[in-house]
Length: 153
Length: 116
Image 1 (cartoon, rainbow over the protein chains, first blue to last red):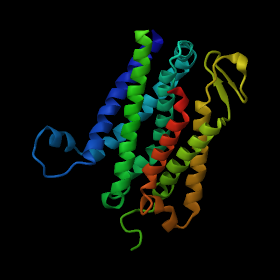
Image 2 (cartoon, rainbow over the protein chains, first blue to last red; image 1 turned 30 degrees about the vertical axis):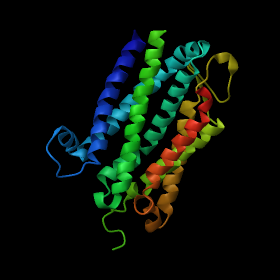
Image 3 (cartoon, rainbow over the protein chains, first blue to last red; image 1 turned 180 degrees about the vertical axis):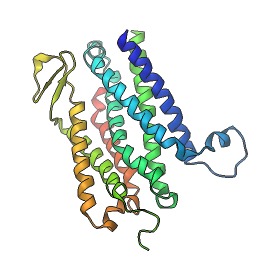
Image 4 (spheres, rainbow over the protein chains, first blue to last red; image 1 turned 135 degrees about the vertical axis):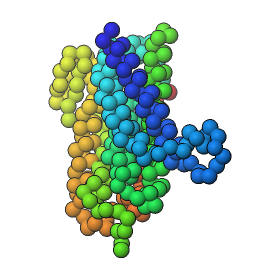
């Protein structure tokens, strides 16, 4: 029950993180002056305000996920390997790598949003933000796939 | 003024290099399977070298420790460079901040192809 509770906490943190980083990633590409429809409203947020929340959510999700990973390694993964679910194991491997690289990018991500004027780093800010958003999505979907595969077996 | 717009403080001169060096460090140590320690979650043991009788090993934490060390070293070395050079990663070479991690993840995807 302990690990299941921790997994739920991990999932809730990941949902909050995914929502925030997706909002910011869309906002960083927004074109100003469009019609005030749903898409424009979704993209018209104070994107800079999301940065610290995204960093703290990323760290919290990462720490909880790293703890769950220990349990996954000697229980779930060995079962998946025994059942020949190599692709599921591979998806989790990719998730751990992209999230570790995303973690390394957090300092420069913070810098680009808080210390560098927009005009100086527009492209870098877009690129790093989108990379982190993709890492979070890959992590979320990868975790879900592993969880669902195990649940369906 | 040459550096107009960017305050050349400690963060601006070190964080970009930290992120790039840590990403590359992680990739290299992961790729070569080099870790300063191994963790065995089933028994809770940390060892300096792999011990097959302790259950499934985890190298991931070690790779991140090495990546952090490489990142810190890269950041501090960059801080020692002239300001113009140490700010290059947030100015003309800013594209490297997303291109390098993207390339790394494409190569890792290739390295993991045997799973798929």
